[in-house]
Image (cartoon, rainbow, N blue to C red):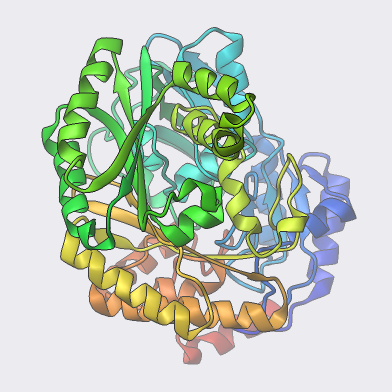
Length: 536
């Protein structure tokens, strides 16, 4: 992270006054909301001043606000819910960016096709809001859930290429189209319109014809995305979670081969499979869930009731050689377990695991919840509220290491050894999850949990940088980066980042929107004239 350069507060003052008098460029947030948008799960080495937060409700307001920012030579950073915990929350990539475009007031669901399951949402629409919307219409579709909780934006998560364990695990893959306001104020629309009140044409085909451009707006700056059209998956007749406990750590390689076979050869509709080591399970669900196993796997089978029931035999055959125990969880079994948990003697051993299992099951069945957010409070358990959890607000220290790992046993073992060695050297546990992102690759996540103070934040950053560097050397590149580590994100592969920079410069030649976000900083000899122009 680089120290912030001097910035003309007079320009910020002129911008603030222009917003107040324009009547068309949104409204300024109060000091409490502005302070909240400055919170992160990291104590930054170079604290930025409290951002100026502008609440925006329409494309016209965004366009007017961009015009004012351009006039004052101020860069801006758009956020939706701002719940990008562990990756920078709402903090921009550049310390010079002092203006946040807060799109959370844009909460409209613009269109919904109940037959196709195609929905168009604005950036402020959250997982919880979508669930309430669908339930109110009796629409049997699953919400693309994540561990970030029900207050997380659907648009923000998809644009960050977040993922979950419902049938479309890769959430950007569910994007059929989008609209965005570009830096020059013009409006971009995907070539094939989706479900929207003022559009006609085919829905359900993301590519259009000609070059595919929607991808330019994922993990990128240069535009403010104002809506996404998403493909939702129908809620099947049966949703059954399976949980398996490994007999021995030496069975890991065979387990991964079995997981790959289930995804490619079983014929079952499996949204995804998680494989978590003991440190990760203990941090998330407590020691009672471990039952002495070195690894625990979870997955979900979706489909017709008869198909799901028959799938148990397939799962048993695949996992029996490596699993000490295999359990199946569905809504009926959960109700039975809850009844037994209230009984004496039986309930004493059963009750600690029923609540986390129900929470995990609901999330995997497409119902958003806060179950996974408990992990972020690992170093600050007393700060965790019963509901409306916000790790940045509550003082949690959290950074994520999130590389892609081939779904192959020897590669996974090299990766595990590397993570354990580097985390131990920096004084961290190594809670590892492997999540099947495709039939050939895992997304692995390693949360670094720490007391959020300067010393421990520095230690966590040093550990994360070491993991990134060694992981790259071994062939495990991260798919997603903290906003303060864009130097790491753009390291290597010169041809790729040079072309990406040229494309971003064409979209946003003045660096107006999220400068530095997944973009290399100009070389040192090019910074002087840019700084002189800014301060002029």
